Length: 455
Image (cartoon, rainbow, N blue to C red; front, side, top):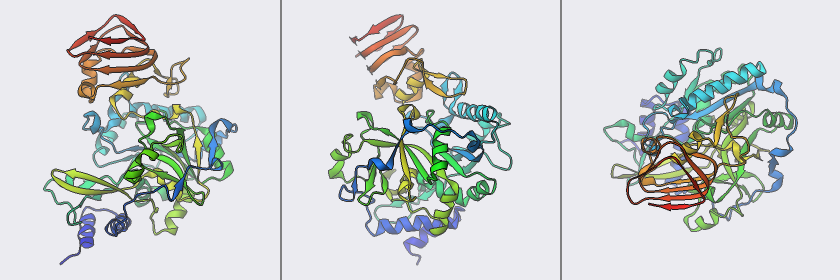
């Protein structure tokens, strides 16, 4: 009779997963069976020391020649299911008819022309996003770099039944697997052969970020600092606000090594302290800069494995409780000696996670500049805070239905919308505005200035 470990090994090998990926999963599975909760208590961490933080405003030197050694990698495995999508989120139009993919492709092509550089753009896709993504990018004939593919595949891990610690075994095999979190990127780069290929072709640095974060653009200042100071790993962080308090934060171990703590790693009894933005003042943007040779060195020293902290994600699949084993990409900050965090402007973190984020990007608050970068319109220092009623505005289709035209938000500080309200032409929001309706209501041809409007 096969053991539980053998059951997972057989399942993963039958799915064609690389042996290193199988071994990595088994390491984490053994930690789970041994009772490792993946939790990081305040007993073992503290707020990061200022010596571990770099202030972006102090960077002054820029060596554009280094761009020829840079590869840009975008995490592109998400479907946007929380917004009602069933295809790659990056296919969503975000500025006029331009999708995330269109903007990213044009950014790279423009940079190549501007700096006369070969910068490759490569996507880490999941099995569910690969085909649609590559089909969409096929029209950008010049985008594919010589001898480099446009993408590589994220791995997958078996879901683990909580009752018997065996693989989930649904008839629909897709339900039996989970994406292993973006921490899988290091294994995927290695197992795909892409890491070796990049190094052999003279690429020494990678800028990695989420495809839905249009603030994450190449910055030669950061690249130059990294190269001149010989730093193996840099995480971009921003100051936490009340809006960010439930997300992961930067910390350090008691011996001064930087570490990332996600909410799933926080003991329940410490949740209030976790959200203390004065104690833990910085969050990870998931914009990372990595020295590829140093990454390869870490892999070689650890049997092709980057020892990231375990994240256990309990889920219900159908009516069966399962565990998902995941890791976070930014957690590698604790793996690299002399890794640093750089405090960057909030403009470098503009992800689209919910429909309120999408509405902002659609609006006049942001514009697309000549380098195909999404930037705040002149005169704005920050974007307004938007709150939309989840009952009516949760999905993209609901958003389109209720906003036939997007109001002008360029003079807005905050907007809260509650109820079934439909926005039409020529609506201007100024200052702090609350709009509430208990019935279906239409708004057009009006300026709402620091008001609470209740229909």
